[in-house]
Length: 159
Image (tube, rainbow, N blue to C red; front, side, top):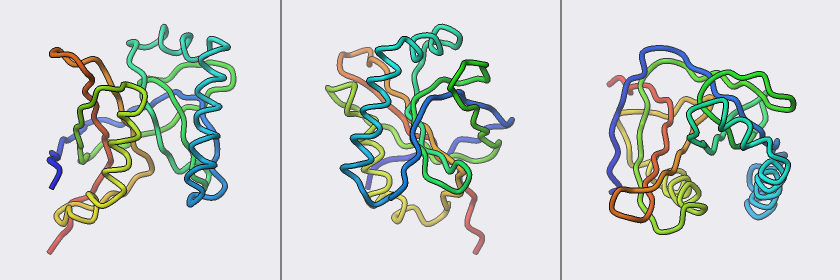
């Protein structure tokens, strides 16, 4: 079983991001292509760099339930007024934190996401993922390679 921990966030927080609405959540290939196209667009037009400069420089890959639809994007911690970006609310509470390491920065967030939704959540019986979203960051590891974490808001399951 992949290791995970439970961390408590004491205050609500916001993230500002650019992203895409996913019409068919089960269209993995199509959703990956839409997400990659959005990442390329905001990288090329400088919008992602603008957000990173306003925040602490740490980029997040974010999955969120926005107006009842699945949404995926890229953004930063904090609330910023940037044209075309959305501000997402993350609630205080317990979070399931799933770490991962890898050699490729660009694929690590997807690897962690796949691990979490590909079976890890079903193995965690004392907490239940409640959303409305989750966020993953990846950064350079001290010993080379990359380190990342996915944070998912959860509630303790009462017996």
